[in-house]
Length: 333
Ligand code: SF4
Ligand code: SF4
Image (cartoon, rainbow, N blue to C red; front, side, top):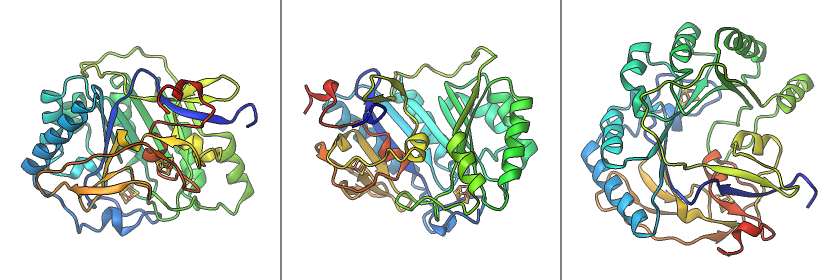
């Protein structure tokens, strides 16, 4: 391994259980680089009571296995247009104190929605989709949220033909916002967990993406009534001893997402697909253990030694994992 090789993706402050939920395939956008699996509206998933019962049962199963911290990450489709969303978030806030709640949203809801509901979230990934986004609304929401969340990122999807327009919007965000984290996300072919990265024919675009994956500025102090979450996040450990906050986008853009032979704690993670399948991880090393639309989801699983050529889904990349050489994992291996 050379000096700056990734050696582990490891919890910063103790293990945590992670539930990633692609809540439905309903979206108010229809981006050209997306696929009907994310906007086809075949799986509306509207059985709120069953979902809450299943969540309650999954959380107790994790607790029985020694997990005390919980991280929920909602995506879609577009989660903010999903009817059960607010009741489920309220259940989490009421019954799982200290849970970290994150959402990937296109930020299309108007400002008053965010004013009313922002305390239900700790982290917001605000994806910017140039073909459909109302830029004024996006900016207004960002101005409101910029000093309220534990983590807030503008995730700019780098549309190939409208690349410069996205870069211009990034400049506008940097002019108008005092706090920002801006991520430039290369497109995947037909946005799905296991697809390949889109190939940009223009060299300057490839260069841009190589040089720019994250820009940050923090001027305003956080002032917020968002409940405190127990630390539920991973860090990247490199062979030269450096440790940085985990970012799947960077790991992919630096081609460090080959974990063949690593130990991967897929048992830390539940992944719920738009059709409701409840999986242990989303890769082929995982398995389906039930469906969120049916009561009584039960699961058991163990860590695995990864035999996949590449780990492509951001959520899977964020699961605790370590190469054989990583000393912190020795007690666990
Ligand atoms: S990329 Fe996101 S916002 Fe666009 S259609 Fe797909 S799910 Fe909706
Ligand atoms: S592909 Fe699966 S087993 Fe391999 S590192 Fe990713 S999540 Fe873990």
